[in-house]
Image (cartoon, rainbow over all chains, first blue to last red; front, top):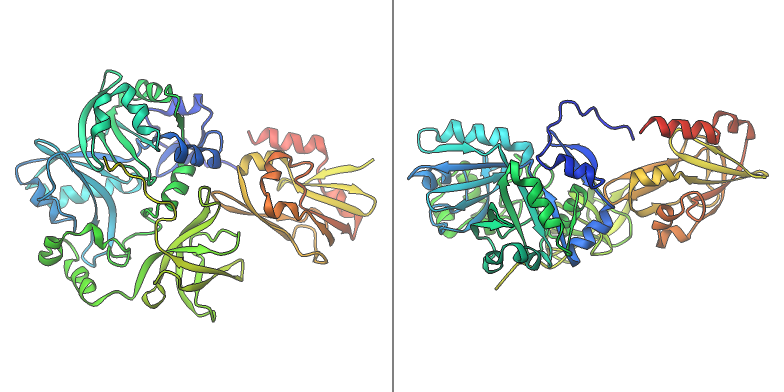
Length: 370
Length: 125
């Protein structure tokens, strides 16, 4: 229970606010981040019933400029960027020559540029990758001086609308410049919890004032990384480095839905031949939801076996789902065992625990459909 | 009067006659956060001092509870199976884990008293 040395860790623009609010700070992806304030269970349940404010300023933000930026960016990702409409955002991933995933990301089309959000732990490598591959075709502007806040939950809409009425009409997966409490922000209607919500990019100097304005709304409490992880796991969303990495392809990861018909047919991204072959011929393993039938959580790297005890896969994310009220997990299993309902066993502390494959998510997505 | 002793790993044992009641400290439950699952030892299990005797799972991670003293497990707090949060609410009382028939009381000498334990957790802050 000793804390790792923190001298070399970076701090977000909200650092002093986290400490003032009683956040327990831990090292994460090179930053000191709040893992919890009042407690992970309470924060998780509050986000599902009201609204939670998350500091995700450690994530990487960049603008990509140039008339050819969309076509250029498509050479690095299987997602459709050329046909992404203005004002919309899309989830996709950087792939390598084997079709493995280098990082997952959000890409948005603004009037005259693309806006990119990538994972904190991967951002330096991602930006170097873009620079190395696309320097001649687009101009990248890394936004190191901007904070990123996520407001998530069924109360997020009404809370934000009090400060920024225009936000309420935003469709799911759209992006717009909106003033919140008089502060210039770039807002997307998106998130990582399965709930309705917004992600707000703001200049670092205004981040604390914005956070305070949002926290002053009766629906909103500060939420740490602990609940962020349990919320995304219940929502069936991938954590890079756990559920997806350089050794997993988008098809194995059950992310085929992120690849449009045009991109499936024409390829043109790293590892396209591998991915196209997997689409045509199937894969030997797939990411699925796994529901332990007992009470014991099964953590990442737990061995998954068939009913007779033969290994058929591995848990990649697992823990306790506060809204489910019991353990939840996801992982990779051989394709023959990937159908919902398939009985499995999880080897927890050397004992086999019964489990079964379930359709993801564990908690229904409640994205804005208005 | 019962004696309470502590380990550096944040277990406590309350000794009454040859029976020791074992739990984790309030400091430990605060550090772990909300507990969601507790695996208790089987009644009749014999453990040596320092052996893994129970497993506790918080939302984030699993950790072990070690036997502060050797002996035979004679009773477990079955209520924790349905309500692990009892440990968060009352770690030093209703959140006890198991009772053990102490094999060798001399092993208690290796444990910390209240003042030494408070010094230990005071320093770690």
